[in-house]
Structure formats: C-alpha cells, structure tokens
Length: 214
Image (cartoon, rainbow, N blue to C red; front, side, top):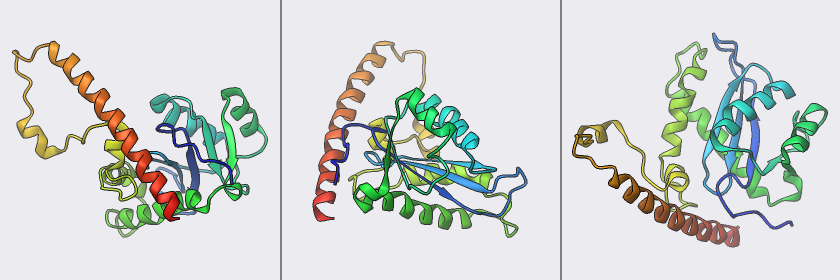
C-alpha cells in the first residue's frame, strides 16, 4: 500500500459524488464532495450534472479560488473525472491522481461516511418536496465543520484555521472599539501561527494512531 500523505491541509483530497437527488428549483441534482484527509474539512457543491465541465468548474471556482491548487486527488476509477479533458486539466495544474483501489479503504470510506451524514442532516432542513436541499447545503456544511471529530481530537474548522469559529452567541461579546490597536494584529498572527503549528502536530498524531488501529 502506498504511503499516505499527512503533511498539511488539502495535501490529499478524496472526491466523491452523491446522486441522484431530487431536482431542485435551481436545477441541481447532484452533490460533488471533496474531503481533506488531513483536516477532515469538507467542501460540497450542488451541481446540475456530473460531467467533466461541471467538475472542472467546481474545482476552479469552488475550491482553488478559496484554498489554492490541490496536490493529490483520490477517487474511484469508475468516476467521470478520469479521462478526456479532465486528464489534461490535471496535467496542466500538476495534480497527482490517485485511485482508491490502491490505497487503504478507510480513505475512501472517509467521504462515504460523510455522504451518509450529510444526507441525514439535510433531511432535517428540507421541505417535504425536497426541492430546496441546495439552499441548505452551505448551512449544513458549516454545522459539520464545527463539530468535534474523534479522529482529529478537534473540529475540522479548528484543524484548518487554528481557532474556533465565531458563532452568533459570540457576537454579543465582540468588541471593536477605537482603542483596538494595530499591534494586536501582530499578536494575533503570532498566536495563530503557534496554534496552527500545534494543531497540525496534534492532527498528525491522531491520524497516525487511527491508521494503526485500522
């Protein structure tokens, strides 16, 4: 089995698709899911089709524009994102393609378990017609990212950003008075750097232990 990359957030992404769902009023019928193995951070996008064009648009506009170019992409050999223009897209960006059959099954299981959880959470929000699930998708993603993850020892949000999210209740105590000094920005950056460094080390230890148990 090849050695898994545990070096940094988004160093290895697992991709999968959920289909077919009820067609929404916006015309969406599928969900493309990208899960970071290192942080368990998940991106999910509602799309109208699962062709290569839709996939490339999601990767460029929905992922790269927020998180930078991905390094390695793990997917099933039977996916629609292996041949033709998708291959030239990977080569242009320097993305290394990996196939789930060559790697530990728990890696593909990561995104499959999330898919089941995502659908369960969406059912709690959507109306009976089930034609508005794409409206609630971003909210469900935020809820998932801020939940404690046993394999990480923290939430995906903290593992990526090195801090806890600001929730609505936190806004009541948020202070932005005029005496807030620019020097505090530098202090925050130093604290954030240390937090991200320590979080990354902790995540790596937890993931290695999880692999040993698996």
